[in-house]
Image 1 (cartoon, rainbow over the protein chains, first blue to last red):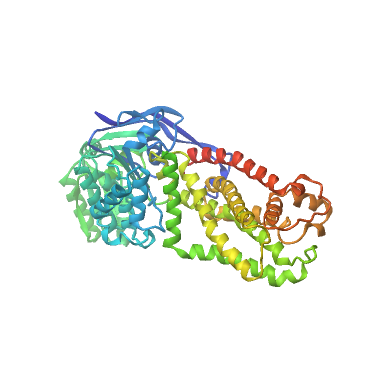
Image 2: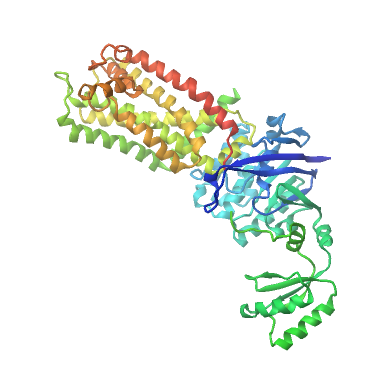
Length: 329
Length: 265
């Protein structure tokens, strides 16, 4: 059974010139945040909606969680029509957003009890559920502290706990680890994985290819308001095909190595931060040998050198023709 | 029933905030108390009440009460704008709770804060010589009247807060509108000294009507200039009720509608 179904969703925003970034001018323009997007999630599985900023991920989550009405298209969650019966949908979903949507002046316990009371639990049941969730998310020690004293990772965990108060049938996580440090992200992944084991249906958006790879059964790649590819991580990687030659060198050697690699394969990708030059190759170890020889001739000692199976980055690049942009907001 | 329960949970959240960060309560009472002292001792000496035997502080206190509760809407607007910024409104809207509870609860919570603020101000007023001369029944009525006024003003704040979505913007928007309204009124000085055109404006200003109504309830006789025959001058209590009802009839539906459709950014 499909727990989430979206069919041909369209949502157009009118962007006034005021809210657009400086430097740009011209009349208000339309942004097609969702441009005929369709997807579904099988019950008990995890679908990761992967895409860069502005791809329409958040808009999709807002439509599915009844916060936004689409201009056209249909959607249902747990078998209930999102547009016709939003109140019924709200009873069976949990939503955790890009930021900790809790009252920061209150304690973790206060927040959870408040949300539980809003789900019409009795005072005693609300309090018991709050304690249970705080325990489950390793927040018991911080239960009586105001949220503003929490670390980023703790806030996200509390936010997640708040979305699980009534054990939702479908859980929506909108970029659950954006802005977290590596440790916080790792913790969050652990928490999400244990939720998945408990059998909840999960739709998760992310800009991190690694995250989609780690957490999801299936991945839907979204760009410009449409799903442009769909499959398991392995299927997507196979779609891109082939292996990649990867070389890591000192910064000053990057231009020289780029030329060397370009002679072997034209589609060179450079990651300045990681000092990594890579390109898809079809000739396997032969390409590797060529690279080693050319580097040796040029007198460059690589820090790392090898053949890699394609990453989701490569998938994204080959699908969209541009690298997944994860930096600016 | 659910709507009431939900609203009370939201209201309780605000009261909890006061316990968790008592500074909010302290600062929201210090400012009006400071105004009491400023006007009583700095300006009070040079403002004539126009009524023999009535000193300025008797006139001042109802004015400051009204000014303070009028500013309730600042707290409402800023609080809701913050909830918008934080995404808390999104969370509430994704939950199966009554569609009006979040905003009703907010307005009720701000009303409850006013109870404390008015109590502290009343005591401060008493210390500096404010002595309402009406019956205890009228005095309690006066305070109830002020609370209702704060509640109805809150609804303007709800709409502002949900519309501007940024706490800082909400704060300036409120200040720029409410501050002139409270001064272009009879709250701090009799309107009889104003130019005629301004007197008309001041007397029809809901703030003046409220102040006049409060003065009446606290046992003072109001004096008016050119506008003495107008409805607000003749019937300040009735007129204030009409204003409050109008505010609620206009702003409650607008605010609830705004809440239903608002998403953060």
